[in-house]
Amino acid sequence: MAQRLIDDTKIAALDALKLSLETILAELRATPVHTDPVVVPEPAGVAPTASFTASPVSGASPLTVQFSNKSTGTAPLTYKWDMSDGAGNLPQNTQQNPAWRFWPAAPRKYTITLTVTNKYGSHTLTRPDYITVGTIPTTTPTPQGDTIPEYGAPATVGGYAIGG
Image (tube, rainbow, N blue to C red; front, side):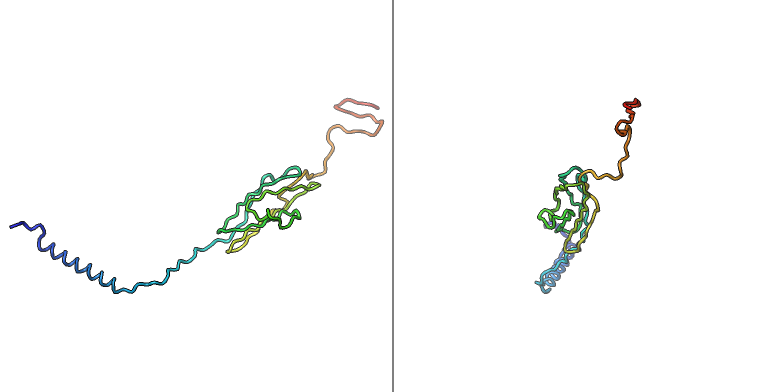
């Protein structure tokens, strides 16, 4: 007689497992299938925070300045730059990182404003007198060193008397 590889206890356990699996399968077949679409909520968005840098921030006229947007917030973001130069809504002031040329006839400081908007809100950053074009004196110059006297009066240059 051939030797039994599986004893009666193991056979009983396998029969019980088979019965359990058949029961689970029958319950799954009896469960209705939902055909409604699964709605995944949109993740919470973040309102923008406007931020920018520029280079250079001062120089002779004409001065071309490259602005670098550093704003944050959930995309997509839109940009509106105001360079305070009276140019209004030119196409380049809606770019993310515009370059702008300033060319005043006289030295001048410019206030720069960036407004960033998305569907969660809007934020504006204004930097007064951020760009300086031309040399703008901060104080009245004081003569230094040698001075020029009235016509005919003696003068001193480098410690030596001249004229007189």
